[in-house]
Image (cartoon, rainbow, N blue to C red; front, side, top):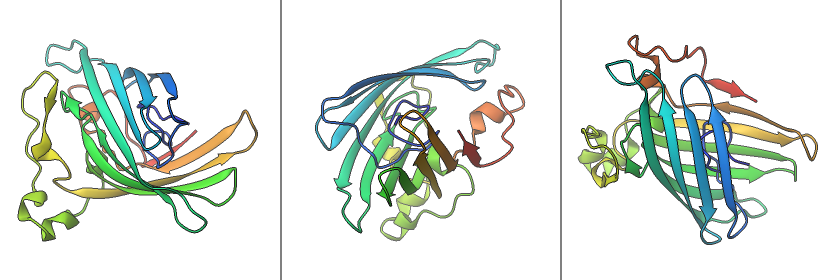
Length: 212
């Protein structure tokens, strides 16, 4: 199923599940932090893309809302096997204002047709809470620092940010209790920094645990 960003996932966090080939999905999400409408398309059995349009209330210094467009790409590196999880690498807000930008590698394993576990590592927005020093920095020291997003209004590919800065773990579990009822719980690595500043105070982040 799809998360609040309109991508295959848990609640806010992504998963390594993929839709059926050529599936086209539209999602609507409403919360105190944002209103989002997303269209996702499974381009090939392994590659999917999402286009998102969102409104963030009281985001600008004037107190006005900000309207944000963002684009995601996901690619399934490994198929799920008997003992092996599916693995997906993804880019969130690949070409946008950078408000939601983040990268991730995530794995999902079904232990039964109805029960699945997900674990991943994220950067950018998905590495903003309880983060640790980027392990990719051992390959190249430039991975330790994530450049600022800048002042672009959208449509800019910021490849210099990809997989840079602190990283953080996330994960969760999905249980399809019936054909109509799915239960989800996740540990979120998103600090919601932009939404929780005193000037905006869009939400009160009480816990890293989300359930739904």
